[in-house]
Amino acid sequence: MKRVRIVGAVAGAVFALVLAGCGSSGSPKPEASDLVGQNQVGTYQGAGLVPPQPRPSFTLSDTAGKPFAFGKATAGHPTFLYFGYTQCPDICPETVADIRLALTHVPAEISSTVYVVFVTTDVQHDTAAVIKRWLDNFSPGSKATWVGLRGTQDQIDAAQAAAHITVASDEGQTHSAQVLLYGPDDYAHVAFLQSSNEQQQIQHDLSIVARASH
Image 1 (tube, rainbow, N blue to C red):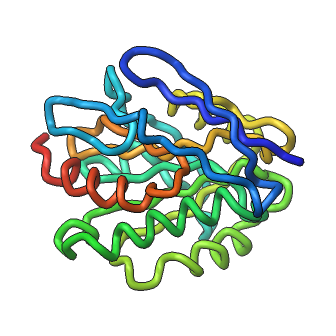
Image 2 (image 1 turned 90 degrees about the vertical axis):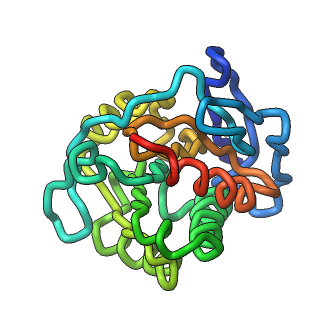
């Protein structure tokens, strides 16, 4: 059974949670209620990051085959960044579905400014067409801009390192399950770990992050 190792920096410390995922759809979900963080822009239901993490700069290929410079293209926008792979049977689709549901429950003036960026960790199987079809299952009705990215193994590894998350292994199937949310100030003040109330956490915290000043 595949396992996903989640690594997140909270209150200046690195803490790891191991959960069954990307291999067993019947796996229990961990609770993340003990990961609540507090920051100058408000109290988060997700994991507050101290210190905040800067928006990384890396360039990968989008599903149209064009270069996408993450830092430049998403600058100033609330942005979700998630690394995973399309053949994951549980954690990845559940996480992206939670993002989509949260987006449909915030005002349109917020959701229309948001980028959702999915980066594949499976460079062998996730072609541009595969990623596009997969994201098309989640994007309708959310009003956000959805972007799927891929690249060489070295490029994907470098992108993960730039985002300060654990680099995936096992052909991309063991990867960080952390969703980073960058704000208009180009810093991630909060991250999310897959849990039974992740959608509510994202919905609550996105409203805080999106309304924060630069």
